[in-house]
Image (spheres, rainbow, N blue to C red):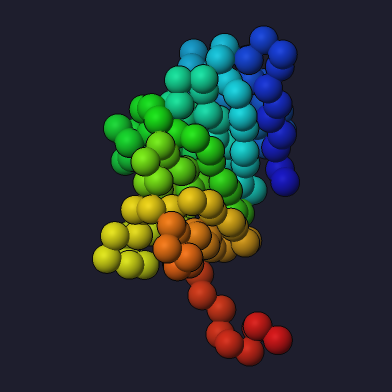
Length: 152
């Protein structure tokens, strides 16, 4: 990791390290002063969940630091956020998933199923992809797919 971020007891976020990899949270500092309950990071960016269920992200824009394209879906109702090295996946109330960051590495979950974001109960991440368990026991994956030989 090139940067670090932490949540203080007051709910305020502090960050340090490489500025372009999330070490400088000035761009989002007005939204990071209180009520932050969790934080997660890629190699290049950070995202926090606030008490309201809203998500704030910063760092390298193409690797999760810019969530403006999905900001309306991250404005509330987020239960948890997961990260791989290049993207984020947020699980919302109602079992919906919102993703952002490097599209090829998991930031775009739109092509994995007819309705990839419905009925999700949990999410797991690897370095370049995500997997989501759904209500009916189905697992869907998205992100970078390795050739079968990589599976051992």
